[in-house]
Length: 298
Image 1 (cartoon, rainbow, N blue to C red):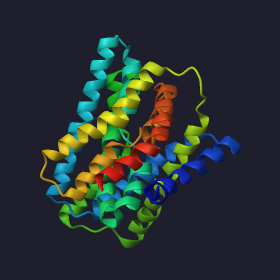
Image 2 (image 1 turned 120 degrees about the vertical axis):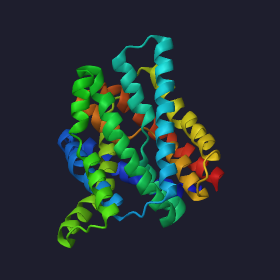
Image 3 (image 1 turned 90 degrees about the vertical axis):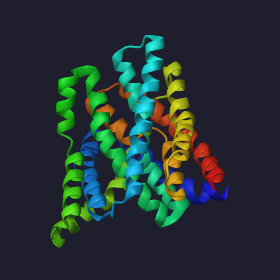
């Protein structure tokens, strides 16, 4: 119970703020999500890669993230092939299972669970996941309705990837950003995580119970909440990584569906009801599952 009170409950309370605001004020989420995607997230990505001292542990983190994502995508494709599901639904299932909520859920959870040392890894994992979502997430969000060419064009318009590349270039060449400019970036980036946490709460408040596609939702929930952390645990056993990083990666893999993916589904009209439904249910289920996982990992 102490793990729940100290680690999970503070995060749930922030979601509750967004939920209550949406229930009372009926706010239009789309312009807010646009600001989060195109302004706040790129600033957070830039700041993290600009300040981080990269080493071999981050190489393993990159390998882990790509391998896990491709395994989850492959499992979705096998499932949709067996059930003869259309491409639009397949893309929605990929969106809701291959991308976990490492940012507005996982990062604060890891901070409360493992302190500042774990938080540094969590921020880097979040940024990496953000880049994957900005590329593959946008690709699958747009692909189902607009085709591959337009999907790739939409990917090219996402600023977070360019922010990461610029930050890595400055980091590698030891070039510095003027303090006044970096102060602006720093200020905006500090607002990114709480903002998307509130947005998730608002999005959850808009989901109406009933007429759920329970077959696909059940598959997505099982893959995201149980199979994903199991795969993560197996991958960690075969990688020479720091034990704390291993715990961070496993806990991150056990997070519910990403809130950013919900924003993409809304932004590009990629079956937002299905994606939002999976996000809602995985978020509710994560309250006991993440608590138990942290206890098991120690």
